[in-house]
Length: 114
Image (tube, rainbow, N blue to C red; front, side, top):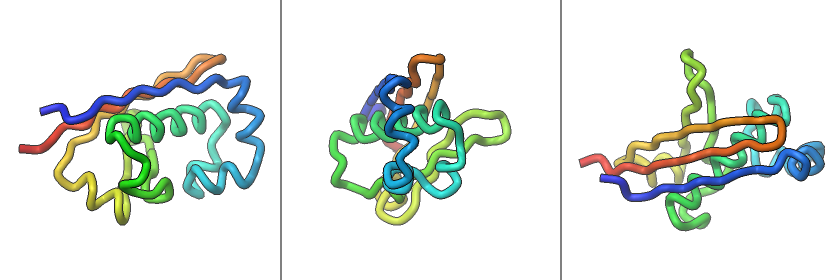
């Protein structure tokens, strides 16, 4: 059963300006993620925003408890730690990220495991 859907889009013109800021990268991305290029970072930022929209709140877990990796096939996958791992323990998360030179977009679907 689907319990949440979220979508977010990031404008690369705006994002490129803020992504240069080291404090922004430290606040919103893990150490591994912060090494990625701006387009990949924008996709990850959109994914986190889409995740929060699917959940309905930004207060249930911390940004730093969420990381996005690419599995061997290249598909993105959320890695949850601490408070996020507890929250998503009984849920299946579907994640899709797409990029174009001007935009990065992400869709997240949360499914209850029954």
